[in-house]
Image (tube, rainbow, N blue to C red; front, top):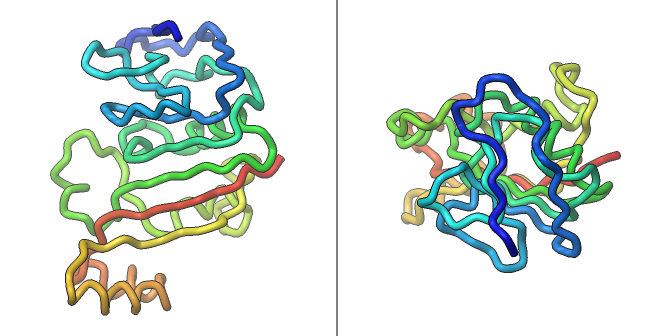
Length: 196
């Protein structure tokens, strides 16, 4: 598979990227970095330091894929680096087929690393992606919809965190409101389904 470069990171005006068809691969690995997946189309920034099938700045839309191209999108440790979450989720929605699965991991807002990593532009709670389900009072920011299939708060594996995890799993809103700063989570994991 040939390496595809689209646009440089310093491009200010979003212009249409060349459309790339990777059929029959139906999995997209966003922000692959060094985690190249053979079964997927691997995308990352234009850099010789990453091994990617497609090099494209995800802040520039549209992304270089046809509508309804993918059955699964992997977005592990990438969304917190992007400027605008709503257009990012809209673009994921556009390139996914109906019923596609979107797997996202992001740092939890209480994670110390989220405040020390200068490339992290956003902090997330276990309810952050409710904006895209139509179940949140602020769901009016977009009409693109996803269904939450699973969401998890992940803690560093310690004895104390096993107890905190049980409490957080039972009542995530109470955990985030009162206990997250004292017992910070490590990261969040979401599994969403594209609704079209």
